[in-house]
Length: 60
Image (tube, rainbow, N blue to C red):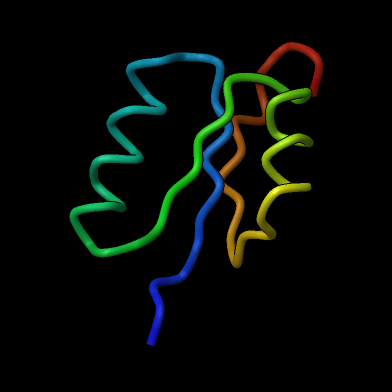
């Protein structure tokens, strides 16, 4: 069984990295995006089972 794929969207690099590291330690497949444009691009490449989104980001 393949790992669930999670997209983490946050404009703060430290938070993106911390969340990604935690999820990868739990054997999830993780893609990160720093803004809405990068998130849309990531969604076109691979559809995640879960999206973790910082709702206070600019341009969201």
